[in-house]
Image 1 (cartoon, rainbow, N blue to C red):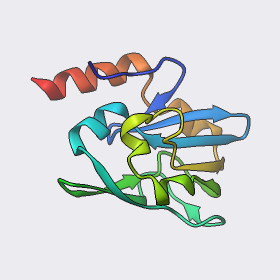
Image 2 (image 1 turned 90 degrees about the horizontal axis):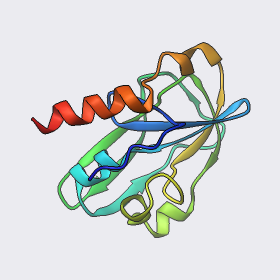
Image 3 (image 1 turned 60 degrees about the horizontal axis):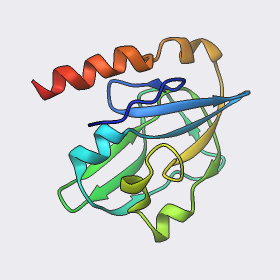
Image 4 (image 1 turned 90 degrees about the vertical axis):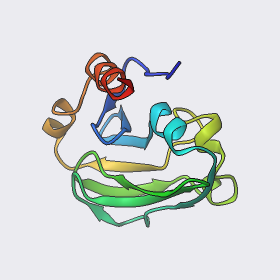
Length: 130
């Protein structure tokens, strides 16, 4: 069963966002890591990089395929999860806790409201299975 956590926001492209004050922690969802399979490489964004909502800002590579990770919001990368460089499989083991990809300084809080709630994201995942 795919885990969708309450209290997070989601994108239709399977990224999650956890708001922490004026920052947002971002990663890929449990559904995404299940679909991709065993992770072998993560290309992280650079600290200081400006990102635009919907633009590719990281790449995850699994045994099946390489997949772009899209920024859920406009912002600036203030922290990246260096651990993933040495242990990309963390994305499979702990997508919502240790497997976060980057922390962004939020440029526009209104964009957070436009993201999917846990409830609406569950429906997206459910419809993808049928």
